[in-house]
Image 1 (cartoon, rainbow, N blue to C red):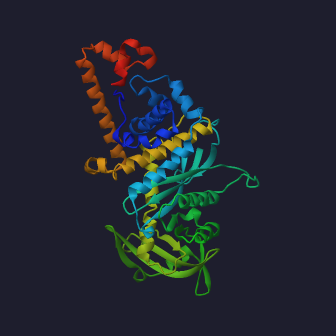
Image 2 (cartoon, rainbow, N blue to C red; image 1 turned 45 degrees about the vertical axis):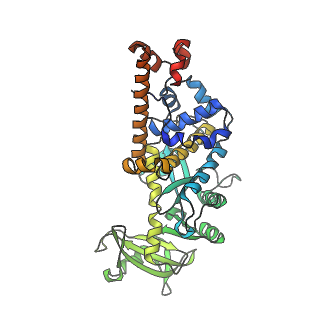
Image 3 (cartoon, helix red, strand yellow; image 1 turned 30 degrees about the horizontal axis):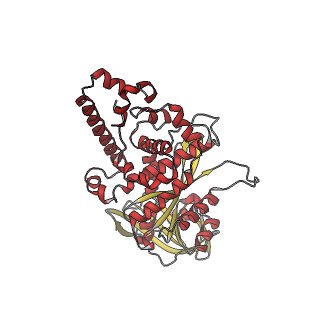
Length: 413
């Protein structure tokens, strides 16, 4: 089992951007937690704390996450600034804000604000949190932007906010931080009059998926999307290639219930169009199929984020009951993902990142190898100081409080 002696470069290179928000002990907890999310197998407070040589008592880091006041929202506000600086000026037409939500499954019924939700991917109800999130997508990268927790409430409750309300807040947040984008993309759940009217009121474009049971009017006749699709012939679909993927597409301007006139795109991935079609719509009636497809494909990067954040960064590993600690955990997971993504853009890191680690999982593993290298060098240094094997093991596997004054210097290098 390796121990952490120093922060990986992807954390160390950006740590100075947060120094003014914390005291020195808080900054250490902050950096250790972000490091732990990246390199530890399980992103719990105890494992992260105990992974550092000369670690403090677990209760200190637990209080940092759950009790001690620190500006978690202000720390999160630093991320868009880092993103803007690293991405640089881009054409707003190439920037997209994507919306989606995910379930974070838990087992404890006494965790703040957990509820039962039906998970269509598993075909069952699960206990957990439902997170709605926004993501900033450029031609080369995808950054998590913001999140909101959907709270199950009686809709008559004055504090109730629907997912559509939360989506609006996330779009407003994206606009407020000044990231260049002109289009919002979302799946079928968010395709509603309320949301598209809000988006259009901000002079933004939108592309959304539609369910097969949505009603359209074609030639004065009402019909469901699936019925209309079945009335089409194979010859009605045109072949379009986008990044080595072939689609067979049909587009038409139609009227859709509650949305008015929209541009409809129906596409298949099989040449004989025997597979289930996907339905996309946009309020921009002049957009062609290729542009709608390109924009909608950017939404799939959210699925990659959810997978990577859960598998590699411990998005749902938190073992806290109180909401403050849970929210802080999410903020730091979003920060960890952002720092790993920025590693591909940082000039000092770009060469080795692009050569050795392109995916988030690969970047986590590369950071882990960096930790192992630092640990190996630390052990060699202790050996060069004529410390015995037993003494080195005492330092490695003891907390700062238990290691004693004799070896305190070893804990700092």
